[in-house]
Length: 158
Image 1 (cartoon, one colour):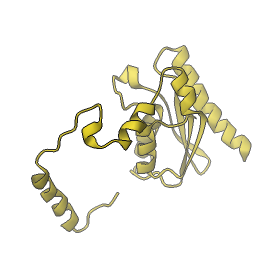
Image 2 (tube, helix red, strand yellow):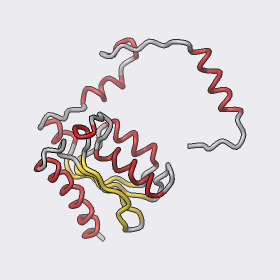
Image 3 (tube, one colour):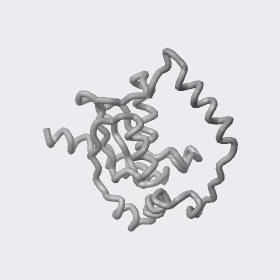
Image 4 (cartoon, rainbow, N blue to C red):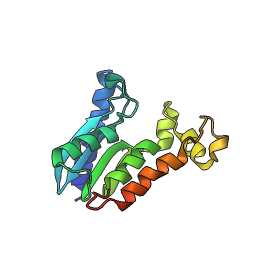
């Protein structure tokens, strides 16, 4: 079984290598597998897509959801060439992926200029102390929509 995991991880590493060699984007790749079959694979697409959310993991999640016709990737495994950043980690949890295998660490990524440490720090701070200003507006009006959602029958929970 370990050889199968290495095969899928090697695929994610090769996607990251391709990105570097073709100058398409950052050195990151991700492969999503279900029942031993590759469902989706993607390299980082931030630069070619002009999309800061198009990290390899998020791009692979989008492809896998389209391929399977669902927003839940329960039962799927992701192989990623690097420990997921906070955004990708959030997407992995929201997608309900069952397990994450990773190669490089977030420290390895920081050493080459992809440092997410400040985001982890920001999340621990109160809104008023964050570097990016936050200001709440129209809470009561917006809360009405949440109440409406709460009362809606036959909604799809996710």
